[in-house]
Length: 134
Image (cartoon, rainbow, N blue to C red; front, side, top):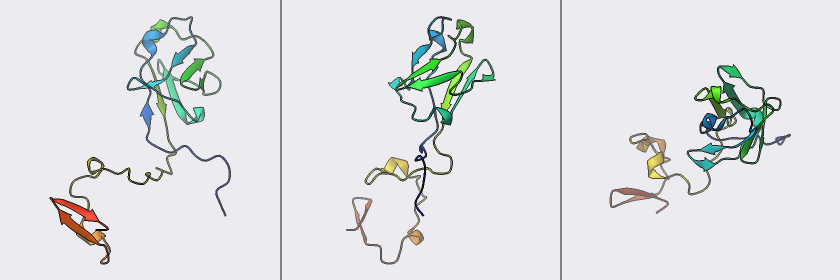
């Protein structure tokens, strides 16, 4: 039987950039960024927001609209450095890498052992690189 329902979000866990320096008890909408780059949260219920040690309720205390977070109540400047949001992928599914997306820097040195390959694996050594299918 095929998977039914919404496709789970999969991927790495990320921490949104700290936006607490913009809190002023007036604004309720803020850009969501990761390492300074605009970030769109696909599932607000796969997030964990904490303000001054208190967990916020997604869909009640905050929501997301594209690449912005929208608060039900404008956050205070007293939260400076006391606010964060984690975005979680599906913890049961890390996803499947796209074709041709795995690079040498993603493989831990010494983790690929000759014994893990089938005896029919075709490969050749060229300039200190192992070329599969060659």
